[in-house]
Length: 358
Image 1 (cartoon, helix red, strand yellow):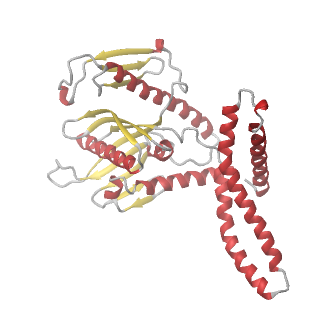
Image 2 (cartoon, one colour):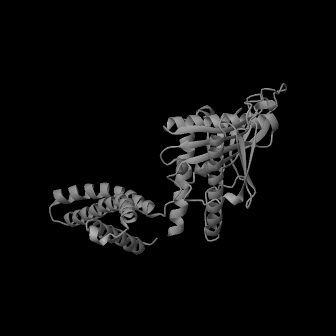
Image 3 (cartoon, helix red, strand yellow):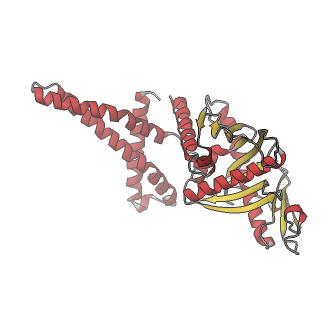
């Protein structure tokens, strides 16, 4: 975005914010639009405040330039020092405003459905999937998020063939969305007697949680089967047909839930996962259309894309999308260092989107 284009956009934002303030102050002009206009005003307010800070800093710079041209040598020296400080600060303020002008991902503020599946590598892949699931559980705890385990399919030796959780909290999807993809592990399995390093993988999918108003599901499009819950190795969990399998006929998507003893609760959980998967399909279709004109993209959220390698013998974790390596695998697996990758991925995505806006 050119400087003139940026200034024109800032002017439009400030004018729109002022118009909204006038409208909201006059109930007679609102009609039935109060909620929509109030949200727009609220969304624009932080941006307008930062524009105010930037405008004030620019005005201050203009005043200092005038002072720097005065005959008084003491005044000139003082103005030059303050100008140097302000010139260091201004690019950061401008960048903040440019970032705030970028279109928001509507899903960023949503909760998320986290799905993990063991990939290639047999038992070791399932053990790694369980390790990743615990990593996200710890990461959620560090952020004060609620982590509700919805479904776990265990291998019997501590591994997870599949695991699903609902993660609830502030801006969950915004921080977890770049985790979707294939996570590869290189380590010596506990069952390996010769000490050979094995490579296996697990797939992570992070879906924004969808409300009923987001996705309309017609009852006639669903086939609902009930069956008896079973634990690892076919061991019976309860003696009633409380487990639920829902098939969405138009797409072929199948969701099963059996963690609860109540059929009603299992159905509610299954519908929650189904809505999230259908909503994500719609988002991906829209993203694919936008990607035709998009120059740069940080991680497409493609579940087949290898995004990260965890090398235990060398104690390193590498994110292949941004070529970033951390030699602190224990802190990554405990969730403590995961933010270092997430912050870098968010920054890279913002930089790519700013470049496109130029």
